Image: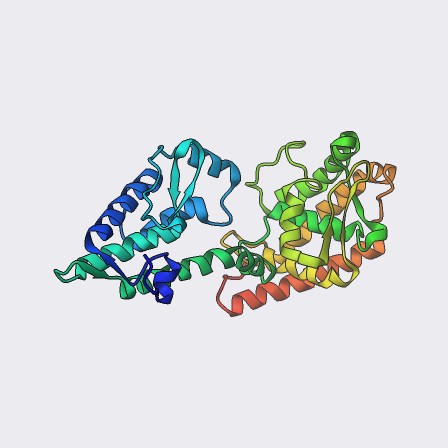
Length: 344
């Protein structure tokens, strides 16, 4: 494979031309390798989609280990197989790479349209396959950041009602700025961690049940402060919400940045007013806020005991007015652009 390669062929480890017998042998080897790792080979688009199980950057390590272990062992690849076409894994098995899959289809296309001579021209088919591979790699490389941007712009799945309740807890209890941060204890202080989680559970559960009665909540089953719920809010708020993990004997922290309060209220009201679920009316949100405050104040002794009781009548009344006003604006906006039918 010493001939000068054009860009597409170079990307796939192929020359611009190849002896017919060698092209058939390489195509047969790659087909067998594909079947061992992914199953039946189809067209290039579907075969690259099958590759995503192993090569998509967001694939989970645990699943990758399980799938790699299931790949059948195979012989050492012949010398004529480009090294970028495969990765060696345990017990002598190999897995065909996206370059190998694309090269396989480049060979198939070239063989299909080749004349009767001994030389198979690869430049055109290799360029076509590499162009398609480049599109897939671009999608994989941008998938994570596009998802994050979508969350920040409110284009992805909206906050679950329980996560919206957690955001209300942070705002109403004035966890604004580092000096009012909510501590997030870890395993080294599991007692305090669980008691704080439990204290927040009651008002958030009342709020959630008021707005989404079908939601099933079980006290103690979910860690609102140290679990997924805080992460769901943080992914959508970006730098407006500061969340750190516990380290050694120091707790982590969670607080809304002082400059991020407006963004937090916008996220809260926007996400409650969008999505496929039934949007609450302004009156229902008002009732949800009222029962939240009622339950929160009933448990204020637990918050005071840990020095994290910051809720005041003045701050709560102000935030209540702002949230209800902005929520009504969000409903009106969603109704005017046709994305929802305004709840009655």
